Image 1 (cartoon, rainbow, N blue to C red):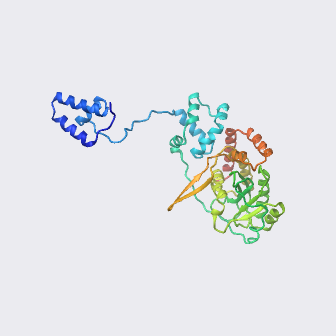
Image 2: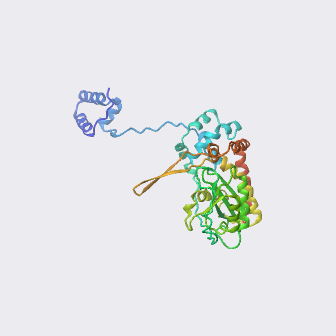
Image 3: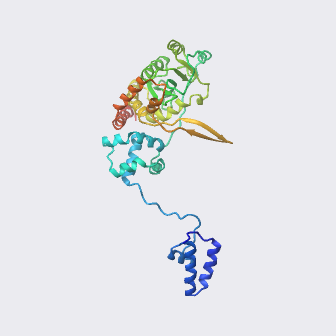
Length: 381
C-alpha cells in the first residue's frame, strides 16, 4: 500500500468524477484513492465528498504532553535558585547540582520529575519560563577621566597580558548614586578575571583613591590565584600615583583602556550589569551603614556567582557581509574553569574544592535574600 500524497489536480479530477458517479462507481473511485495514497477509507471519502480539504505538507498533530505541572513548578524554582540565568546556562547548572539538591530535598521532587529534569532541554525550559522574564534597565555612569600617568601606565609591565590564564583582571567602579550625582555616594569596585569570568566585588563609601586602593587590596587577597595584571578605564580613582607605585612594587601588569571606549574593558563592563546591578539595583546608597550592608551581601553573593552560576565566553566572531555571528563556548562556572585551567596550581585547586564542598546553594540563596532585604530596608521610602 502506498502512502504518497495525491496532487491537487489529480484529487480535483477524482472529486469531479466522484460527484457525477453512481453509488457502485463511487466505491470503485474510493478504492482507487485508498490504494494510491494509503489513506484511511473514512478520510478518503471525506476528501472526495468535499467535507475535508486536502492539506499539502506534513500533518501537524498535537504532541502528547511529556512534562507535568510538577516539572514546570520545579523548573521555575530552579531558575529562581540560579538567579534567573538563561536556560542554556541553567541546564549546565542542573547537570552539576541536581543530584545534590535532590539529596538535600530542596526542592522535593518525585522520581518521575527527577527523570524529566535530567533530560529536559533548554528550549523546553524557555517555553516554561516565557511568562517570567525580567525587564532590563539602562542607566548612565559618572566616570571622569584621570590626567596623571597616562603615558607611563601602558609601558611599565612585568608580564605580557594573557587572557588564556587566570590572574589578569579588568576593574571598574559601579556607582550607587540613584541617578543623582550630587554629593557623595557609595561605589562598588568590580574585578573580573578575563580567563575564568570569576568576579569579586567590594563596596566603598566614595570613589576616593584611598578607598579604591584598600578595596583592590582586599579583592586581591580573595583571589584563588596570584594577581598578575589589572586593566582599568581612565578614571582618576585608578590612574594615580599610589596605585601605580603599588603595581610597580608588586610587579603587577597595570594597563588602561582608551578614553571613551567601553569595549576596551568588555568583560568587567558586562559584569557591571549581570552581577552588580542585578543584585544591588539602581537605588542610591550613600551611608556607611549601606556600604557595610553591600559588603555583607557581596560576601555571600561572590560564592554564589563564582561556584554555581555557569557563564559563557565569546570564542569568535564570524562576519558574513554586514552580519556578525558570535560563537560562544560551552557554559561553565568560574569554579569549573579554574579547575580546568593548567595555569592554576594543584594546591590552589584543592583549596577551591574544599571551599565548594562546604557550600549549599539553596542555603546560600536564602542568605543572599536576607542580606538583600536588609539592604533594601535601609533605603528611605
